[in-house]
Length: 309
Image 1 (cartoon, rainbow, N blue to C red):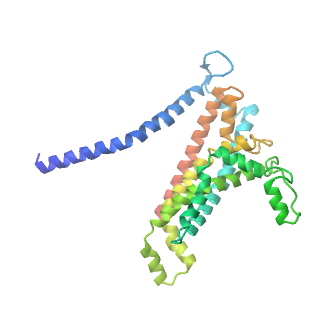
Image 2: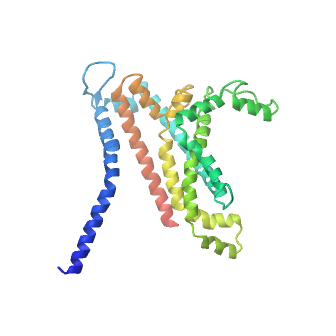
Image 3: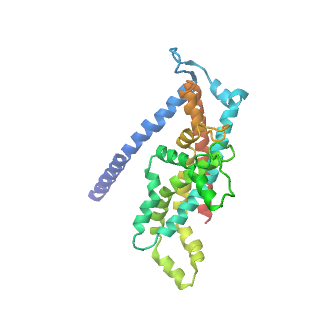
């Protein structure tokens, strides 16, 4: 082997070693906090495990799954929670992404004081979800003393009556959706801002020479340049939407009439209120597989669109 080939082989080995070294922390975290808990949940889902009894786990087979999916005494709760999750994601993903895109376009200007506005819109993301939920629960307080009801009464000159936003099954989920969009749009805004700043300025200069108006520049330059960024934002927002729990637990407790209950809420309450760890683990495994399937389908569809474009 020549000296040149030897040096190339050594360089490749060093690059490979450097790659594995940089990947190792993420890989260890993935194994410890994703793979191991999932395998443990899979094992617990086949066991009869309860927190309120000293009895050791005993084999239960796939009975938990049968009850969750087929038994009339249990399946209604699971499918209701999954329906609420799907409604939440179907509304939050497009609206939050659109709002984040609009904010990013407004804040992507070389004007004085713009970093202050960017920080202002990003601040809700930094606040803990528990704190945000408590604040919005106060805003949604029923009766005339509620902040939102007071504002609506003032601007409508008393034509809009006071509402019980979190106590009404027809408005409870909508109230949580509005709060979640407000809290999470800042994160997507920052990601889209980074994507906007990566679009070459020459493209906008060429569009200006062609006398393209603002809408034509947005449609033919900005959106195509943000395609990969928007795909990433939509996928991340979808995954985060299915993790809905904190808002429900603090603001409504799954009510009223299961209007805001979610699969994650059911899994937690099943484990720590009814003490049935086995059934809670089965719910978790089923929900993970459902979210994984939706994510893979979404990725496949978006990838096909990108190839066509």
